[in-house]
Image (cartoon, rainbow, N blue to C red; front, side, top):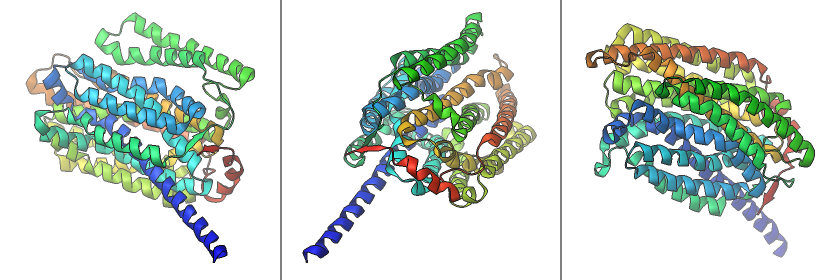
Length: 505
């Protein structure tokens, strides 16, 4: 009787542990979804924000760009803090701060306060988001991680494109007369639930090797990013002054100094902010380049697309939001297929096909926008959006696994911080380039009756930029390994490295 009870207890404990890790996965994915929705949800509410607060187009650009800027600057540090002090601890701190910042955004009394609270929101997201990939990396073994990253990629794609629909519904409903504010206040119940469930079900983990916080490296990285991104975001409003060009040029030697310092820090105590040896991993180095350029695509497209539909075509928030439903469905379906069926068989070719398919959708969209002009209807946009969504889904799901597949787990926080940083850096660059790609093609003093024509021309101009960047994404993908180390016949090779992580109960 006693001998039989031991295996039963062991089996029950194993089932309980398995259930806990899947609940933990649901929690971190919920946090990722909340963050991604919050990036895109603002775009659809731009007209409502402008009407209620009197914000200018430059201020609106800061509402979106300020979040991306704070996010990009803080992500590397956020990843390293998780490695040092515990990923669960930093995740809970981040999701708690993100929830508070969301409440402050919803209570903002003017554009200045909204910009400030969005920057705060981006900073707290920088503590939360890097821990997500690190927790997944530390919780699931190599043979399961392809499936988990596939689920994560689907959530990423769905979150990025469902934000406009959720924002449209909340803005259109005008709950309690709050207009645009519920797009931020909706984070409160989600954040509180994530905080409570995360505290109970997420296992603590940190780097096996004792690390120290690199304050000098943090300062240099932050200064370089700020010098590059601030002029891009603020340049058009300031009339592209000389100091902006000098600041962007000056960011290059700051980044060079950062690299030299990190090399010296590695030799001195082995605790750099950025583990530069990661760039010796071919899949990581190539994937970082893809992530950066694809972020530029997202930064340009989503903001320009919203401005085109709501201001140029005069559509309501709900009409603009529902127009994106085919895009959302296509992303989710393609993301699931890419990881489960296509990537294990065709490897890198799936991501390259995604870039070409998405570029084909962009060209089709350009043709339709030019042909139908301001008279274009939502059903006419469905085909190019489905093609674009399918292409995006083929990229966003497998790219994370491709980048992290050969990264040792003790550097998971630093690696995931870099992945998210370059993605946000790309998005911030894209948002800054909107000033050139979109607003640069529009007359600043356009007559009301000519808004449709001007915004259609600006949209077409910006979409050519998107198509060009997608071709750069396609070219960079040739540097990715043919097959990810975490899929197919390569999966077993990674297992010895994966045992180096330390889980803290």
